Length: 269
Image 1: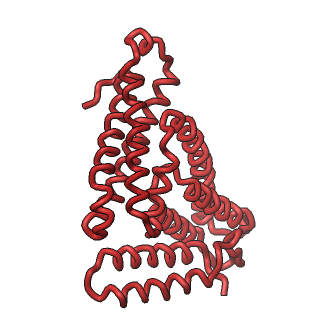
Image 2: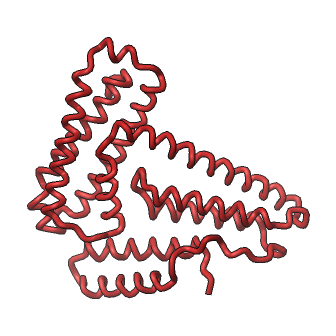
Image 3: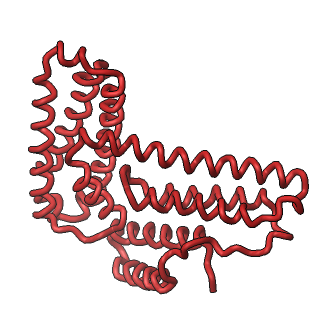
């Protein structure tokens, strides 16, 4: 049986949500975990996502339904991938767009009703725009992370939480401390900037710093979600990471503020 990408995404999203609920539930834990394992194995047995959506004859299909299916695919991706700077999410976003463009390409446009032709053109225009937007925003983010040297290990931590992966609380605490030290040093360097150096910065540099500040805020929210998920539920996590994670959050808040004030030149609200 050939499943569509949207079906596969929804299955995996369901398994992820079920696994999260299992970890957060104290009662009937064993039954929930077993059920999650069974469902995970079922989804895994379906294999990886296919290279493209199965293309079927379009004679009886309505383009308006395709628009709804595409919207469902986008919502599934947004629900499944919520960590900023996630390369895997970018790949899947582009793959979905390319698959739908390929489906439109083999459609018999002349055989469609006039309303469906209009929907077809609107959908194709939207897909082309989204592809360009995803690539453009990703390129800008890759420029912005040059001012966030700690972004990769932090994204890995957040993705591990999103995938409900195992953690080593002691190692995680050590990583939080290391990242906090690195971030605090960056803040000190930014505060050391002379006023005349700030005034010399061109518009492009300031825009890059503004994007960096926004990304730091987004990563900070993800880190708070990680802490909120494990804190209390996992006693080892609470024991080892309580101070290190708070230190890192504070350092990241200071980094986002310093980027905006010292590089962009805008006072933080």
